[in-house]
Length: 107
Image 1 (cartoon, rainbow, N blue to C red):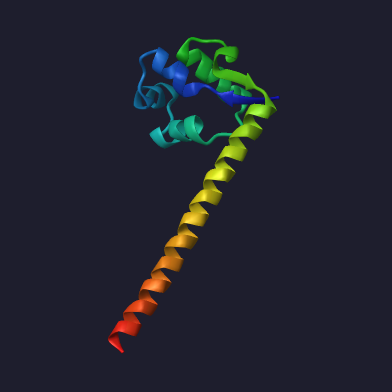
Image 2: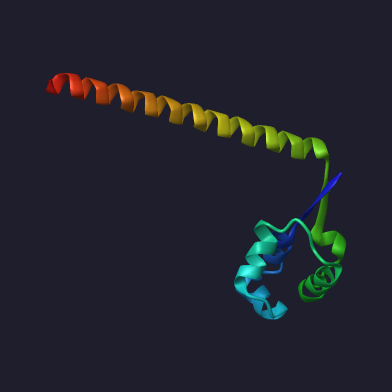
């Protein structure tokens, strides 16, 4: 079982901008953005402070989801990476072929 911080969702439900939350938390805007987009761990003191500022319970900020869902997301991202890699390989092959043809036409 994995958890995700639902900070952006709760913040928007409270009609707060990231800037508003940053001021209320006495944090930088970048700090709030990090929490919303990249944070994988969170100190309990910070969770408590967020709950106080957002007037919510810890359970409102944390969502539990199945590892299967997380694995499916990883698989989808890997598939997209592979597709992009294949497109890039094809683009380079086309460029090399085009360059060969241009050299052939010049000679």
